[in-house]
Structure formats: structure tokens, C-alpha cells
Image (cartoon, rainbow over all chains, first blue to last red; front, side, top):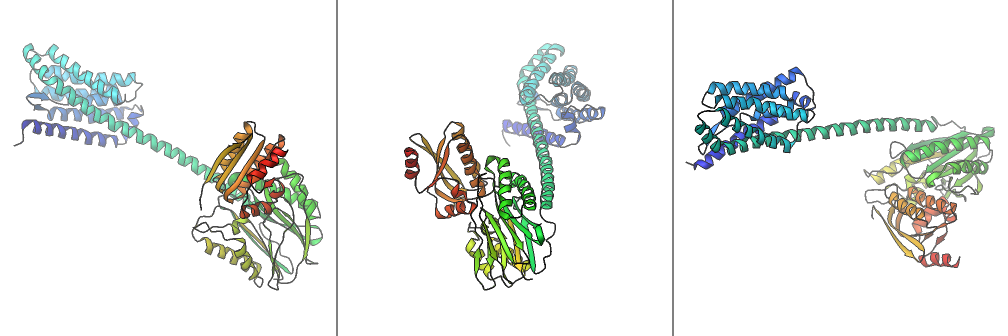
Length: 454
Length: 117
């Protein structure tokens, strides 16, 4: 046999375990959050009254003598009902508990029953004073201590013979107050935990809704941006074109364009806006529109680019700029006239297996409104393959941050002069993909290819 | 290779020198941008940016430097660059920015040019 103090403690511990399970189950019901949020409905009140009335009956039924002093948690149910649901719920649960207590008899039957109803009422008043909110840990526990003190006072006031009442209260006061305060502490902690959890859930839901809205907007932005690119590439007798732009994020700063020009000539544009994301996408929209208009206005590439630069410079706050390569192909003559505004020099793989880079002096658009652009011309031959690209291709990195690199691209392009434009485009994309493997890419990747002969 | 950008500052006489070390890309540039803007807002008109520790610069990094240059030039100041590694110099050359920024081989030359002015 264990010593009495240990068995008594175990019984007390079991009582508290029942309270924990009870509190947990109650917080998981559908009606509890409604009640906590001040949702007063008769149905919810009735449920509160019933549940915590039952807890009050359990409190009476599980009452024991601890080291010779009587101890029960009958008042706990009505107190919680009152703290959570207000005076109606508190009194209702108290009446159930009190009714049951009356059937148990004894010289404290009236005072204890009355105390249980009053416990529910007082807790309910505290709930009202707290604007129909659960009062929080400190107030709930100190409220429980005061209410149990009131309970002891009632016993002294109403129960007779007085000497018996005095003896009972002096034995029971401390364990009763302590046990009910502990039970209230458990309930308050679990309730507050539950409220925290619900707050976190609401915040998470709000952020998720916000995120979804932003993603939807970005998706629309992406579609609008795609509409700035040519919907299809024109067919040119004796030439073939292939192009693709892949933004690293939802929207990007790369673009290409194919423009009809004077006398059957065709303008090709490839460009890369500084930085990335939404600012780059907005600047891309500006730049592509300006370049399209300027190219339609001017016959010479140099004039078109100079004018575009002047216009873009007026709009380029925070140092935004765009590197751009613009060339005009005369299909009949087979000549290519080009301007390079700070863009990665396109590679021309010649039919004889050699490779040249189309460099020309010129600063990126938007950087300096006094920029001067050099214009150059080159004669194309059948079999030549021209590759316009953005640095997302050459700076594509593998997992160890090794870039694909200019040299690798040059070697690859050299070997592609006998391929069609579409095959060459796919070959470059495949080689870059093989280099990067699964490493995430953080730059847009754009390619525009022109093949002389088909 | 690092994935961060360290921004440090040292005053040489009156001139603040900003040292950038690591990778300057879209993710890491905002720190450098804030630092440079703080100096300009504080009234500095001559700025030297030392790029000797820079391993990589993307267009986002170029944008930050260009933004500083434009702000300083607008108020009669200047942003000088020094000690560009060959691969960094190449990025500046392609974009044509080598003709926009005064670029010096080392810090002493950049500061000496300032003193001579």
C-alpha cells in the first residue's frame, strides 16, 4: 500500500486529467469558437449549460476526502460556462450542478448548492465586464480563487450548526480553492492556446488569399507581356526564323521582336532589361513599344536606336537600362545592317565553319542620353546562321555556379551551321538544360535565330 | 563561390570608399544600393567604389551603380570605380558602361585623380 498522501495526490491528479481531456474535447467542438467570438445564440447557450452542468455533476461525484478534508470541483463547470458564455450559461450550468448537489443532502446542501449557482453568475458577470470575452489566464484563475472564497463564506453564513461549519471550512478552504484554481488554470490555458491557434490560422488564410491574388495578377501580367512578343514569326523566302523567350520568374525583362520595314526589309530586335521581376517587366513594356515605334519611323538602324535611347532615357529612373541589338535584313541583297546598344554580341556561324561576333560600339539604352551608336553592315551568305541571345543563356549556372559561358556557346553555334533555325534553337536550349541540370535558373533566357537558306 | 555581397566603407580623407565583395545580383544588390544612397543623401558628392572583391555582377548590379552615378552627376558629383577583375571589366565593356564610368586600376589612382582635381 502506498502512503495516503501519495494515493490522495494520484486521485487529485486523475481529476485534473479528466479536466484536461474535457477542456480539450470542448475546444474541438464546432460551437466553442462561435461562443468565444461572442456569438450569442440560444442553441449555443443551451449546449454550454448542458456540457458544463455535466462537468459540475462530475465535480460533485468525483469529490473525495483529501487527508480528511472534503474536496470537489463542482464549481468549476459553472465558472467556466460563465467565463466563456456569460451569466445565462453560468447560472444554467450552476443550476444543474446545484440540483444534483441538493440530492446528496448533508448539512451544507443548501449553502453549497447556492454557492454553485452564484459561481456561475459571478463568472458570467466577469465575462460581461470583459465585453463578452474570455477574461484571460490571470483574471480567470484569480476569479476562481475569489469565487471559492465566496463559497466558503456562504457555508459559514448558512450552514448550521456553526461549529461544524467552521471546522469544515478550516479543513476544506485551502484544498478547495487550490483544486478549483488549478482546474480553471487548465481550462484557461487550453482555451487561450485554442484562440492563438485560431488567430494564426486566420492570418495564414489571409496571407494565402493575398498570395493567390498576387499570383493571379502576375499570371495576367505574364499573358500581357507575352502579347508584346510576336505572336508568330513571319515567313521570309530564302530565310528561316526561330525564337523563344523564357522568363525565369512569372514576368521577365527580356524581349525580341521581328518588324516589317521599308521595301520588304525586316528588322530584328533582341533586348535585355536590367534587373528582374515586375520593375523589369514594366520597363520591358516601355522599351519594346518605343523601339517598335522608332523602328517604324526611321530607315536607318542607328537613327532608330538613337531616338529610342533619347525616349527611354527620359523614363529611366533608378538607373534602369536595357541592352539591345537591332539589325535590319535586306532579304534581296543578303545584307545585315546592325547597331549594338550594349548587348551581348550575337554570333554569326558562317557556312565555312568560322564564327564572328557582331560587335559595334554603343551604350545600353537609358544609361546616357548623349550616347552615340555605331552602325555596321555585313554580307550574309547561304548557310549562315545568326544567333541573337541574352545573357540568361551564357550565364546559366549549374549547381556549382559554373556558367554555361560564351566559349561553350560559340563552339556549339559553330557546329550548327548545317541545321535549320528550329533545330539550332532546340540544340542550344538542350545544351543549356544539360549544363544546368536541375539547378534553379534566375535569369530570363531568350534566343532569336536567323538562318540564311532553309 | 559566395552567394552574398559584403558591403564595407572606409573614408580616405573626405572621400568615402565603398568596398563590394562577393556576388552583386538582383538578390544581393539592394544592400549596396541602400549604402550608396545613404552616402549621397548624407551629402557626399565624390564616391569611389572598389570592386576588387567582386566575383560576379549582373545587370541588377550594373543598375545600382548606374543609379548612383546618375544621382551624383545630376548634382555635380562623380562615382568612380576601381580595381575591376577581367570578367567584371568584360561585363562593363559589353554594356558600354566603360565609357560611362571613370574606371581606375587601383584605389590610389582613383583617389590621386581626385586630389589632383
